[in-house]
Image 1: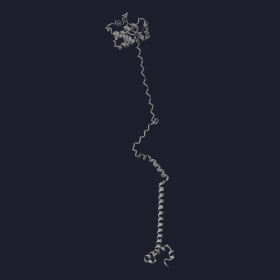
Image 2 (image 1 turned 90 degrees about the vertical axis):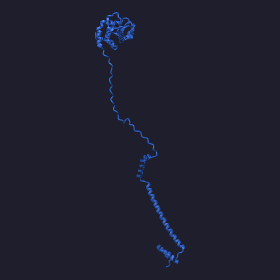
Image 3 (image 1 turned 120 degrees about the vertical axis):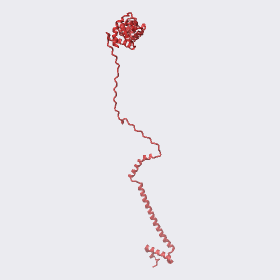
Image 4 (image 1 turned 30 degrees about the horizontal axis):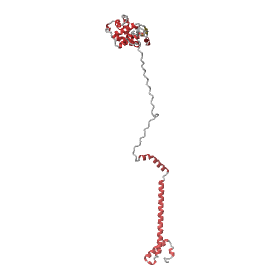
Length: 288
């Protein structure tokens, strides 16, 4: 049969391919069975376009598969499971302070004030026992001297004033006896006011006399320059006035008691003082 029959061309592709090869080879060798150029070109174009299409289809399919796989992987990586998302959020909150400390701002952060202990937190101080107040020393009045030589308490108190003033003035003991004996004679050791000087009765007194303006323990007269009524009514002042006058008498210590007293008092009865010398001596001894 002739190779160009249609029966042979409708055979299987393998047979056609073989025949084509044979035809090509025979065409190269023999030129009698050469296929026309137009037909050969169409066959070649057909084969080439089919292969290209198959290759393109295969390449596109592979690219689409790879792109789908990549997208799936990217979606899986970008969409973490809920547990991973929560862990990432917690980590972000925990490191927020650390990130702030790494900022470019290097200024020192303010030191938080130290907490001041509250009154309730501080330990309660034990109430200290208040110190007992020291007992105040009350000034007690000096004990009144015990009367001697037949004197009353008032007389003994006045005698003590006379002796104390003489001791302060450093008058010798003999002068103390002369002063007490003179007061015994003049006023019996009582502070007299005068009925002639009503003013004298405005001051503390123990008796009233009428011998002119004579007042006080020594019956000294304000009109004779001994002092004011107010001063002479004070036993301490009257005794000091007597001592000052006695100390001015020249040689009074060599005189008898009565002569020394008379030199001060200028009394109408100069020898009356001698009778009180013994009692006055007893009183001075009791008070010194």
